[in-house]
Image 1 (cartoon, rainbow, N blue to C red):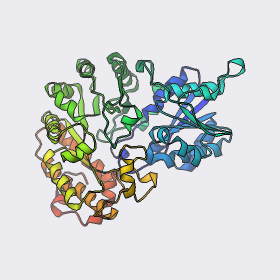
Image 2: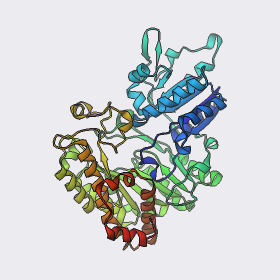
Image 3: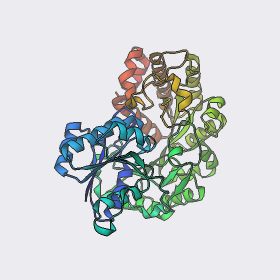
Length: 486
C-alpha cells in the first residue's frame, strides 16, 4: 500500500524558533511499514510552511491509500485539517491519527471529525503496522479490524475501542526509515549550515508530574534501547547522512546511568564532532555531577531540565519529586562545565498574582539558567490537574493550549494581565542575561548564547509581543547593536 505521513502546519513561535525539526515518530513508524513492503512517504508540511491548499495538492499528487498524522492538544485542529484535506484530495483514502491528544480523547476526535477513520492509541509502530496489514489482507486469512489492539474507530453501533496494546518489548527491533528524510530541510539555526537529526533512545518516565501528559501516555514506565542500538544509529546518521547536530527527543534519556555513561563513552571514543542537545531531570544531573565532564567531552552542548517552579509548595503540587535546592544545584553543575542550560518555570495557576510572578522572576535570576521559559499552564483535558483547573478555564480553543497563550484566569488577575506579566518576565530576564553573557570566559558558549539571542529576536513569539510593554531600554539597544545581533 501507499502510506503518507503528514506533519501538520502548526506554528506558535516556540518549537520552531531554534531550528527545523523532523518528526522522528514518523521515521520509526515508516521503518516498520517498510518491513512489510509498503511504499511510504514522509511529508513535513510544518517545516516547509505549506498552506492547507498546498497540503491538499501534495496529497492528491502522491495519491496514497492511507494518510496518517499525529497531534498533541494544540495541534489537534491543524492535524484534523490535514485529514479533511486528504479526504477531499483522495475520496477513497483511509485516514489515521495518533499522538497524545487522540489517544486520550479518541471519543471526542471520532465524534467531531467524521473524516477521521481510525485513532491509534498509544505507541504507534506495531499498532499501525498491524492495522495497515489488515487493509491489505484478503481471503480466509483476513483479520478483523476489531482484533487489532490499540485502536478506536466507528462502526454501525458507535465508537469502538479495541483495548490497550502492550508496549513494544524490544525497542532495538524498531528501525528508522532515515532514507525517507529530506535532510536539506533540517538544521539548527545556532550552527548555520548544520544538518539536524532528532532521535529517540528511550521511551517514558517513571515519575508522575501532575501537569505532564507523557507520564500518563507511557503509564509511568521507562524503556531504553541498548547502547549498541543507539550508537549504531548515531554512527549511521553521521556517516551516511552527514548529520552534525542531534536532538535526543526522549523525556528521560539518562534514566539508566550505566547505559547513559556507556553512550557518552562511545561518543568520546569515536570523536565524531556531533553536537548533542538533550532534556533530562534535575535529579539525574545532581546524580551525575562526577561524570559531567563526560557530557561535555562527548559533545553535549545544551541541556534542558524542567525546574517548573521556585517554591517547594508548587513543586509538591506538581509532583515533581525534587526540591528547590536540587534545581539550583543542577543548573550550577551544568553551568560549571560551560554547557548551555535551559529551563522552564510554569506560571498561571489559579492562585497566581503579580507578586508571585515577579518573585519567580527574581528567583529565576538566582537559579541562573542561560535560557528560561516562563510557560503558562495548559490544562490538558486528560491531565491529573484538569478537574481542579477546569473552573478557571476561559478558553477551550485547543490551538491556544501551547504554553504561550493564557488559558486559565487566576482569581486575582485577568488573562491579559497574566500575559503581560509573563512577557515582562522574558524581557527583564533576557535584558539581565545579555550583560552577563558578555563577560563569559568560554568563547564557544558566549558565541552560542549570542547567536541564540539573534534567533530568538528573529523567530520567537516573544519579539512579536514585547513591543506592547513599551520601548526597549537604550542600553539594551546599544548592547545588541554592538554585538551585531539585531
